[in-house]
Length: 438
Ligand code: GLY
Ligand code: MN
Ligand code: MN
Figure 1 (cartoon, rainbow, N blue to C red):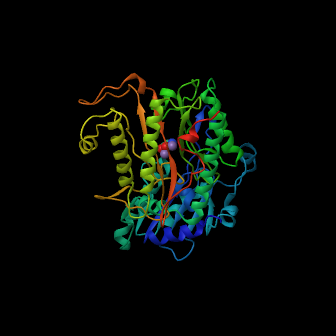
Figure 2 (figure 1 turned 45 degrees about the vertical axis):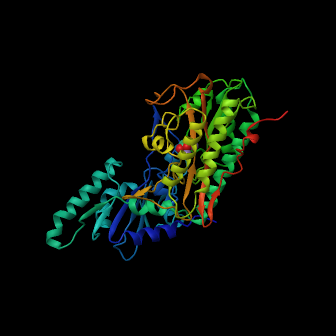
Figure 3 (figure 1 turned 120 degrees about the horizontal axis):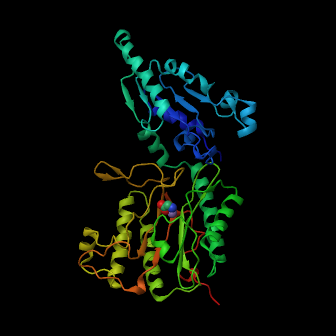
């Protein structure tokens, strides 16, 4: 089922009212000297066009009767294509990407004012696209100068995010298929990694195995820098050094996901004992995180909110930490004061889609956004026991036997009519499955 870009554009155009939208592609980014990072398209631009070249600009012109989707693209250039690869050019922009009209990028300065003429306002994200922003503001200023004579002109400048990100938050059936695929490949990689891990290996070998699988399965690579964190490294939430030796007796936390060619992402975390057997403390904390995750997953259903899912996980974790003697005091008081945050310092999940931390609001004014069918989010509680953060006043000091244990369990979940579809279920997580027998 191909993604229906044209349908999205129609929806976007009608939501714009009389505003003309200018949506830029990402620019190539310099890595060092004359070497560039692999190109990553801007997700909003990609969502509306599926066009994968840097520097392009898309115009959405609802104030016009025709030619309402216009693309400015890098022109065909044999020499540039010899060095950097194929370009679709203006003809391809029309024939393959459905532009009503296309022009070479070089003509943007000259043609943009005419295209914006007659719009009631502009829809553009300021602050991110320097030269284009300057050009656009010049066009706007010219229109404002002429407006009193003509009796009309663009008055408003709005960011397109409120429209686009609402669209992106609810996934189409075609997008759910892609997210299932990203989660499937990601889950396979986690299973391969767990089967391969042995004491004495290096974190980087595990990283290589995961990322080899992403690419060999047709993905572009990782959705984000993989986290392969043995022992205490797991208590560093964004650990990406991935160069430590895996020690007998430690846990290994792997947070890694595949990004597909069309940028849909997986984001899975699993934690297991490197030698195949939990210590008593590791087992207690693993069971607790798993219980919190399962309780939170139960709450993924239409009408609930990400906030409610987070609070569910927090309550289970805090209750468990109290029984283990790692927290002291009244349950509600501990939650209210955040007295658990030296052990659990992040939220329980985020939207997932073309961006790993996908767009879309979590609150609407005073109220949390309620879950609807088609939304996709992660559910990822954890516990991190280390000396990095001070123990809050009144809370017990932590015995050495608990330290150096970092655990997170993360799944990708689509909200369905009846609850939540766990897209990453193929990555096992039951306590017994994390241990090797025999
Ligand atoms: N891997 C990033 C996250 O879990 O949010
Ligand atoms: Mn995540
Ligand atoms: Mn993750």
